[in-house]
Image (cartoon, rainbow, N blue to C red; front, top):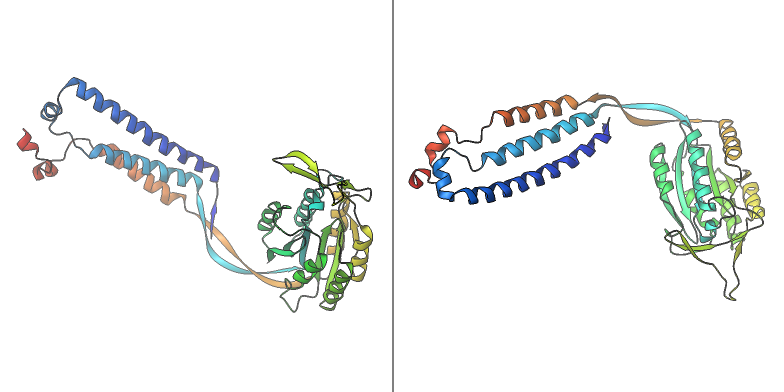
Length: 348
């Protein structure tokens, strides 16, 4: 495994194509100036030892030297030892509602962005628990399997949007059924599912059946309500500009409301708890306290340790190339001149 200590220095590589273009421009200018000064054959007689390829060789050595120097500044580090460490935690799956109703702006900036922030803040409070992510609307879609890589979890989380699933609606039961497949460790006793949604579900009976099936598998379901009971219209935007509001078949503006009742019923049936997501800090604190009180199960995870710096190899190659660039002259070497590759003697 490789880590980059200072990746910001990669921007220095942008200087390489700029230097190459500068060299080409200078070469064209020099050729034009030489043609104005004298005939090419006369120039060959005036400078018979001038090499045709060494200027390009010097440029190549210089550019490669700068490239290796940049890699040395970046300082790649290589993991030299793979260790198995023991960690204690619970398995947590976040099912995030990405239906169009989550675009309602009754909670700033909108319900979906609020949900993503809630999940991100919860992940920040975790220590050694494993997490997975599911996106759902009319269908459920796996985003990230159970993992201890919190960075990857937050990256996948930020990429979620209401356009990622073509079919619309809110099928909570499908999210619960998919989450049940995430818990692959039969010995894990604490299996937690967080459903983050506004609760608009048109198939409540199916949701309760799914909850019953999940509890039989030892899954505890917590729900987090996002939105307001007063409700708000669903904006339709293009490039961030409001075009219209979503309307029903009769042409009336659709008002979407937080359905706390169904979320509370799901949490109660799932041996969990309903949590209001209106206050991010309070919700995160409540969830953190709940998770800390749970029994932790020990599991093994492999990770790289003892990362060693590798910059010295790149700096060594850079100094060697730049050293060669200094001592490689643009005139022909004696042995190359004897080969008479370009018929210099005949031309003379």
